[in-house]
Image (cartoon, rainbow over all chains, first blue to last red; front, top):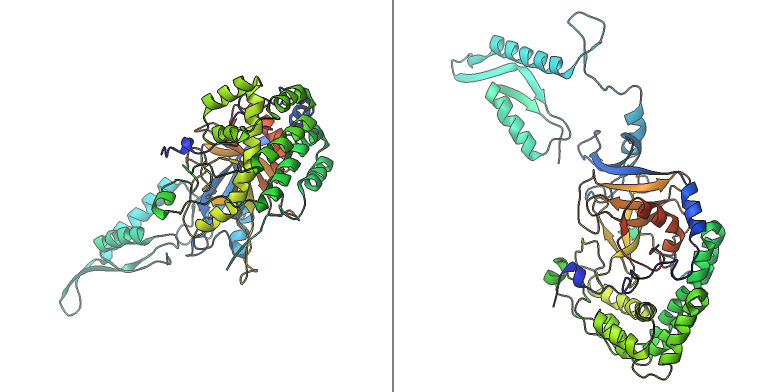
Length: 188
Length: 307
């Protein structure tokens, strides 16, 4: 037996390809005129992840000309099966909200103003502060004289979107710096 | 417990459904009028075949099935008895009535075969996709091979439909993620996005639409993932998109730029009544026109999307 997917019964199409609607005597001009009068545009469905909580529900974003025009729950995501909570269902308004931060903001010590910064600047600043703090506070021994090699003045908090493997990687990274205080929100 | 909106195929007869579609989209009325006798003949065939039980659905082998082999693949044609000739003659009358431009060719087929007792041989040739045998049959009868093949194919569809309900029971607990029909292996002529209703979580909003494909041959419906091309299995979202009119947001043509195939879709979630998938694709021929103008081919070639 031929089990090629094209080898199954194709009764719907048998003989059809050789004959068109106009050969069957149908006037296609009304439907062609109707189709021409419709403003038909293309859009894409892109699967993304809700940022709100640790369930990390998938949702489908409908994207037209590079902009999200609507969202819906992803029915194929096994945890929520397409349902969204009130926050997830409001994804589009959250995405388009003028309150949404789209660039990092920085408030300098003793300043009362937030200043927009580029990601490169922010990441460099974080790295510098981590190094400075670690260099200053790194403890090789505790009060009892036991060797500990740790930093107690930095706390690392992971996001709700981290899976087991990402958590393991971050764990190794922060342990490498000597951090002992860290946690994350993810439960996936 | 999972509750899926169920098709209302049995709620109305096809003629009532076509009448409603005709009123909704007058621009397509000549298509509805041409196909209504054929769809009525197929419905009559399905009703006639409620008495037919001379077939045995192959036992489902989960391993084989879940690797992508439809349950009826390779099945020998069952004994169609006198049902096939009866449906064939109903179909000839319907074709001639719906499409008068080819009535002379249909009449030639009626004249050539009216005393023939070998119509079931034609059925077998179509079942086995034996084009040589169909050609010989048409040549011997001196009739148009394309029209004869269409009639043979249309006359077999009620048999597939009759078998699909029992075949569906065999596979109901098995896994299927292919774009072609798990029962007969044909490609879909449309898909429906359906709302999943849950008993205990009505407060949960969103209700993402599950994609259900409708078989162009046996009428079976099966669920597949939203982000996959049913033809080539591509999951590249950059190459999967859809064409939609601003005027009718519940209708669209899903296209794949990997294989250049398309299929039409109705989003049923906000509709008050589930469309009848036996006739609904006819109401989307304008999307067939648009998709084919853009260079895409239909996944299932049907009489109404061969433009």
